[in-house]
Amino acid sequence: MERLQNPVQEYAWGSHTVLADLLGLPSPTERPQAELWIGAHPAAPSRLPGGPSLDEHIAADPEATLGPAAVARFGPRLPFLLKVLAIAAPLSLQVHPDREQAERGFAAERTPLGDPARNYKDDWPKPELLCALTDVHALCGLRDPGDSAELLAKVPALRPVADLLTAGDLRAAVKTLLTWPSPDDVVPEAVAVAGEPYASLAERYPGDMGVILAMLMNEVRLAPGQAMYVPPRVPHAYLAGTAVELMAGSDNVLRAGLTPKHVDVPELLHLASFEPGRPDVLDPVRHGEEEVYLTPAPEFRLSRVDVADDAVLPAGGPQLLLCTDGRVELRRDGRTTGLSRGEAAFAEHRGGPIEATGAGVLFRATLPES
Image (cartoon, rainbow, N blue to C red; front, side, top):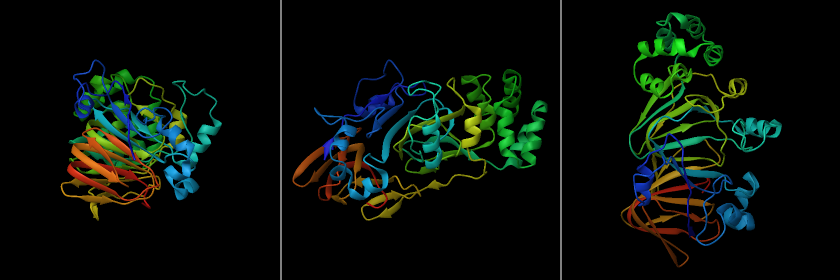
């Protein structure tokens, strides 16, 4: 088990204080810091102190680090990626591929890796689990098209879209919005009817049809400790808050709006699900000394441990352990690793159970079978 050095990603929607405060570093920072990455994705892997990156460490002995079952199912790579998100401004409205779509899209795409116009960064799916550390505001999934039609029908120019929604043709409605010829004319009209939070989105992204597309989506509010599972293909956007996020080990993002970045409308329409429905807000389920967030994702499982007395965490499978509050001592096979707030460790498959002591909050990312 090794304490990790974890990279911070700087994106425009990030915070100047949240991640720096979590890591005990000077704040405010000069540039907005958006994501703390904990894992082995080659785009920004964690590192072992004074040693290799985590992906290099795993590649040297996949079966010892990940376990034979994980290698047999997912190959010689860590199947999940853990993050802390500091959402000071809305993220882009986006969808992620399922496994078949990611494999097909990555194999077929000819745009060079690293090109901002490239859709598929890797050949992995990207289901996500977002667990709130503070109050979190998000959009997720398409709401009842009749409700959306009632709202958009109040804007004369958008009545054709409202008619498509009334007919239940969400895909055609979304396509019409994303190919609208003159967004600068219609977005202010729609915002005047809909109010918040769309007025704030339009202020940040004027003339972006993603503002109107957001009106077709469910608003979700998570209290600290609650979580939301986002399956592949489901449109979503995170608007505000701080959260732990666990996902399959992918960086695949196709954007639909609320962004100055590349939007590939045909590929997005091919990728996204247009089935309406509200996302489930998840409360954790007690499982031994852990509180587990149950999802159908085969690539990961997230649990939370409130370490007040001694807790024993199971052996087996790769594990990422993140301390979000207090300080926790982790003892395994006679060796102790201390984690303070914002610090994380990687526990290999080989080795015994992990004893956690101290006073703090620990998030544990592993495989569902572990």
